[in-house]
Length: 536
Image 1 (cartoon, one colour):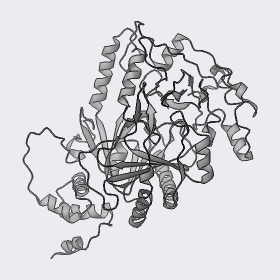
Image 2 (cartoon, one colour; image 1 turned 90 degrees about the horizontal axis):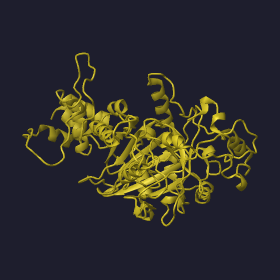
Image 3 (cartoon, one colour; image 1 turned 45 degrees about the vertical axis):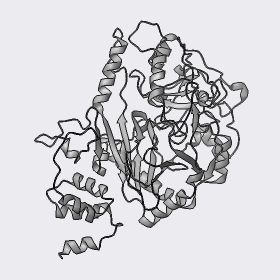
Image 4 (cartoon, one colour; image 1 turned 180 degrees about the vertical axis):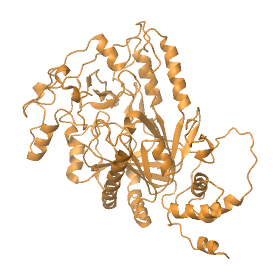
């Protein structure tokens, strides 16, 4: 028996992926790294099984109606003589699989760390959470007079019992308060410290390697400190979550999220958002413009990142504004020795103190509004807005509240200093006065409404699409996505029900000039008084 054979026979499953790849590369120098990594993943990390697969004679290509898989990234990224790619990575109707950290970072706003925790710590954390998953629940919400539920279970965790009580009594999700909020488990808290350190390192490295060497506009310059965690449980291959973006209400613009996967490996699919009116003209046909935008989106395709046990995926700034992500249903899965068919996903997040519900605008229903980013309207894409979300509560109707949100260069709202003073004094000074609710708002004109949402009332003869059609389409696309933990964004959807004609009342954002500390965040002056650098 040769030296390499002896080495392989004594190799344990706890060896790092890089080490295993180096062994495979030394034995198969004719194979590219992507192909070997794919084989290793398909062999559940066993080098011995991977070698057996590589020795098997190649199968002849036959016609098939099933799903086909790429052998490597290089098989679809043709390069020129100078090494520059001359063919788009994504292809119409196809899913491109990214396996290496380099490919993931090059083609997505994400970075990944395999074997993040020591193996024994990852296994212990998985067992700790599995003990609680039987008590997790699915979220139920209302969508056009229809009550639907999330396609997986979840639970919300925070750092202390005091924070848990605040979450139950002060924070609002999907238009209502959450009753089941728990204190983070001991091993979850221990892992959180390591996640914080690694995520901050990844943020710093990504900024330094960017073309400008600077952070993004609205991205926070402060250290990322996770204080909230949503734990998702996907039990079996059919449990999933549809394409969505995470809600920004308590995270603010350009958030960063650390996502730790445990148990069964699943596919994390992402696709970039394409504006529906990129090709629209003032006099063009709205249906033709939609078809052109849809064709562009189809041509873009989707990317798939495989998330094995003990992998940390960092979703960097711009991910939530410009991309949608999902956990795709699988035909089959390879059971994990500890979790069986279950995948556990811990999404560590940083909730901003200055985005506490007592500071943010309240809609006409008296409920704190939800923060969203315009994603599909080219004219207003990238702007943030506060909207009513009460209509998602089963049995309730929402209002038509709308207000442009305003943030500074660092992603802080106009009342940030006031919130900071309150936090330092530990007082309740920041609670909004009832008589201030709605003060200073003015109703927007039809032109402002059209600019804000990129849509018009049905019947107007313009190149823009009727708002009711857009609302229905967006809701259908996100029907399987909404849940507390994922907070899927239905782009700029108002809480008005669809009728044969639908008129939306738009309220234009208004933010104060410098205020005294006693001026409430819900009392605004016209947006024209806002310094240009602060406008969203």
